[in-house]
Image 1: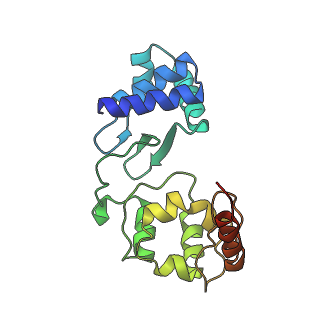
Image 2: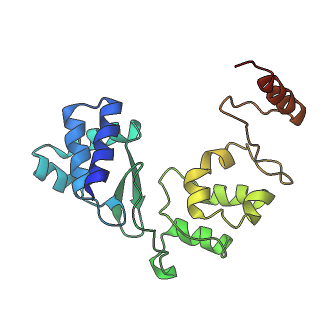
Length: 199
């Protein structure tokens, strides 16, 4: 991991106001992160290195996940747990060969063979249900840029909560940061009022 990445990790940790034990855990993950962006060290190995119990390691990792500093994926296919530090970008994910795909990745690939397999599937993703919802949605089904990452990580909650239920339209976009959707007439009126302000 580069020095600038370590700096990012430290800044985010400072912003989240984590305690010493959690910081030690986060740095241990950072030091053991590979060039694909994840750490596959077991709780037992962490416990030996940090002179703590496996139960303490589990608690610290849970706290870091709850504070959105890390994301944890159980790769059932490889029988490994992968810990990612959120907010860091590493080398591009290499699409696995079909025989190396996890069961969830295979399901997605079989349902959408033209979409890229560009991430591992987080444990909270219900892949069969997600695929079913994607198939009902015209926009998500046909959008070329909707890879596995887009569907399973970035847009999972939006798709699963039914926010994209209308099959004929693109997902609703909000204007500015208010979360409110403005009509064209409202926007024209807003810009006109801004133009009339005397500086």
